Image 1: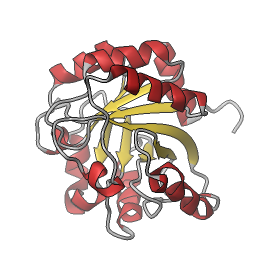
Image 2 (image 1 turned 135 degrees about the horizontal axis):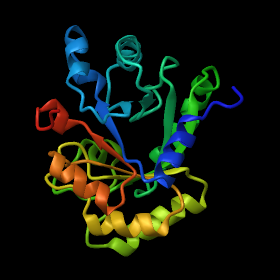
Image 3 (image 1 turned 30 degrees about the vertical axis):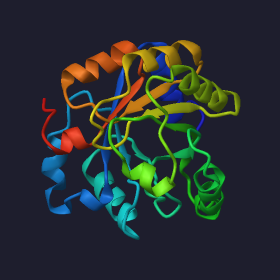
Length: 238
């Protein structure tokens, strides 16, 4: 509608105004439907988005969970899919991910092509997103499923050039990901270098387990931080 900001526009505006955003990532296969109301009462006060997705999710589970979430929160629900099957018309937007750190065509373009027929039948806002997997100290589900290797944290030039290639190819967001349950998060040096070079917002996730680490990530330049495992395990509370 005229005069209504898109979800991408809201993220871009927040980035320009240096307003930091926080998304809680929900893995549909780990979500306890019977405790959904209590779950959302425990969300950090500064939560601005709900991301939904996982490397692998049971068939139909994403749609079920998204509908439940929409009934108990007014926060934007954005899909963070591991493959084309994790698309729900009940969500608000979709991070149209391309794993640009890897060279497996299945996750560079094949999964995206497979998703098109389903996406065309929805009103989802589609947000082209460059996804960069960075070594977080352990083998992640993304690494296993995509059959790609993460970029080394000490190779900042490669990470930076990959992020810039994503921007130049039309991505609207760049997502720096250390992976679910990472031993350590994306370094401040990487985040700062990427943020300084890009003209689009930067999302950072993986291995952030405390309010202190969250603040360090923001100070390094992240526009939106994603927390999943840490919140599930009770590391982060209001």
